[in-house]
Image (cartoon, rainbow, N blue to C red):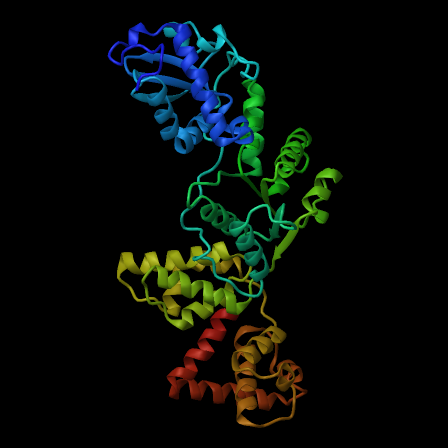
Length: 473
């Protein structure tokens, strides 16, 4: 039923500026009553009425971010309200407002300007629009399902899951993740974002601290700082990666501090990552460092051998490629500091095998990854050899210099002597002294015995070869 005073639906030209504006006021009032004052002020207050062309009404917003958000969350409802209020309108088109005047000016002489409400937003200044999207897209590969959990990262993982399930929980806002390069901080942040945006009800902005700074500088240059502030402070969850980049950038720190306070005070969630804990980030303002440490601080330790093996196995399984256990162990022993580099090495190995149709072996691994392995080269010591061999055969390090002669101890000790002869420049008497002051003839016997066993037992030879490659790179 057409409301009183509305024209026939077939004649949009019959609508005057005053009538169109009156319809828009009623649509806005009904929408505000439905969503509430807080949600209306956050997302919908900045809508400006645009022109009516045939059966399509344009609604204008100051940024792409707001346009996309309103379109996704309220687009259908706006169209239904308009169709009920004014049957002439069949479609609602949400557009970005450009320049100092709206597109509505030419068609309607600006209904908002002709009869403004007390809470109507001020006219948009004639400044360039910040055209790039506010946030960096989330990587679909980085989810909780693809994150391999072990002792070094289990606490950070649990905290991230908690925030993803219930953002802004007491004690978890902000969530501050810290750890070395390539240990999984960014993976967890993307996983939180992916989980929260799965049903479309939560708005998430993820960006690096460097990106935050560049956006802020661009907003200053284009005189659109208010739009920048409103965009950031309108999201439900803000995630800033590599916060240490803001050290020494006082103006950007100031802006982040105020954004941080505005979001937390409004009950929104903040997630931040850095390479150090808040207390160790010297160069940040004290007030910012204090605020960052007032929530949940979770560190990610360096990976263990077991966790690196699990990561490599998961990566190999996801690639549907069979990688020998010996190769996985070799990589896990050689590349210890950076998970990203570890995964990259396996990716290169798999790609090389697929491209050239060659099997993945220890020999091929060392050939294909020679540059990566060379970067991890270091001087091999007898103490390191003893430790690696003891770990491999699960014996105590003290057994290397003890008088015990049981085969379970004597054989690994002989292998360690053999490797010490092969990989170091130490003389036989010097090696003997490192193994409980044994005579040089004992070392000679060990070298001879291990060489003989390697020729007879393929499995034993592979164990020794694996240890040698792990030690020498």
